[in-house]
Image (tube, rainbow, N blue to C red; front, side):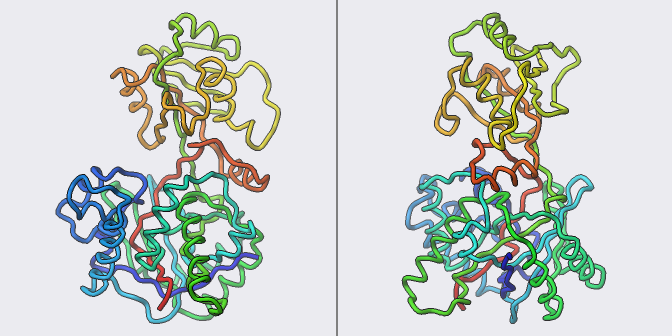
Length: 414
């Protein structure tokens, strides 16, 4: 059973929605955020990355940043940039990129289901990043960024969502600067809400697709509120957190590619020789290599592209048979001596949305010695890892399109 609960969203007035909506706080630096909000006082980055409204050099984790975030949020509510629905609602959020759409239900999910592992994760979190979002949620008294969840498809949920869309106009419908379409419907009918809530009760498990730090932080703030307000009712708002829930079949994961800073003291000839013991190495004279099947890799080295294919079979294991694990275990660690990719400074990661041209740029500039293009992890693999109780290697998944922050805010108390 999965709990999906309606809530009274704080959301932009319709005329402000395109200006408010912003990419998630964690996909850009402070400098990039400052540039992104130039001439846009309505951007949600003024709340999500409030250091941009403080003097340059202000640390992004300073107390003043969280105080400013809360002030900016309250000011935007007071000015009518944000409004709040008068009764609990569910919402439908559709994103469209390059002609492909994914449509999810926006509601609140239960911190207890996360604690009980009914909402499953596949990534580790960093304490520093958790503390940052804990402070942000705590000071704003709100979940300001939605958690991106998925589930194994249920036809009844898809039909309930589509039935509403067919009969109602969206409250928002705009295209952001990166050419992504954003369309939102509000479900404000009790019967329709109850229908979707009931259908989600037949979903055994929800899975975190993206937003592990936001999820963990939302839960910890909820537990903190329980201690502060001991004896509060089970349906208190802080026992739930903001989520957007998409069916598995509609999601797309892009490749998450690797670059390495050096060849571990090997010459190019020595490196290729050692590589050939584990992989079939074929120069691709026609140009860039974007792998078309699992267990194949592209490699860019000294202005040449190569196709790498594993020689030894790979036994199935939900984690060890992932392409990112095979590359790590058969090449990065034994040949290049790159250990834990979470901490090793000799490796970096490039999201597939940047394209293979970015890999060439990093290598040709001398920033990296070689780059590896990956076959994308599948949503099914993500679910299998989560079901096994295991953790994926870092930077295994890059979801596109990115959810926009600022379209929905969930207050932790009225």
